[in-house]
Length: 297
Image (cartoon, rainbow, N blue to C red; front, top):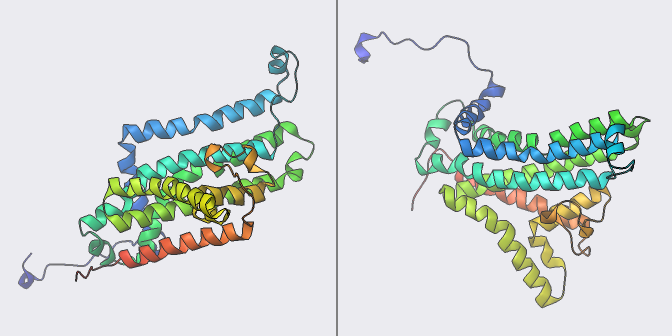
């Protein structure tokens, strides 16, 4: 429109509240993922484990099912180990989902120089990262702590007798343990996506951070005859923290194979410190890469 005509008028309609502007990013991201058949099928498959665990809880309190099985009681102990195994399995599936979804959140914007278009609007860098990160937060929450707490409520309603009040630590462990994993994986996926700017490579690096680093940690322990190399093994760090939250000995096989703890010489506080250091490093990478303009030397 020619400037001399002076017919341009600014938008004077209702504005989106400032606190919720970042939600525009996950809205369009979910719309794109909805069109992917592979993602839809995979997400439905991840719900099979909570369904099976729920059937186990129901069968444990159903007389007709118990009679079909010969009148046996206590088919599976519904205790902390039960919920820990559910959390471990679902968290492992959430890792694969993050490897598929996470790298595509930031790398296309960086590769196509789209960040100036975002940040030229009333949209801060923190809101941009939060909007991209909320995609993973929502998806992995639906997969981990939400079904865990629903099963906890189901067990409490069927068991009765103040079972919920006596086992509140399990619910707290499911919620806190899931959020530790969700935040860690989300930050790692976004940081790697911003670092390499190529979606396939970012997904491969996410697997490398876990499996290659775990092998390197094992080599350090074997050569130096120590256990401190496990501070590089993220699955070991998470497993140790979960063991302390659920008050379980995970080296016996709880928490799914991906999070088994084979040595217990590393203090829990060191595992917490290592996880915080990893999250801090991811935030540093995001702070360096998420900028409105890129200076090439």
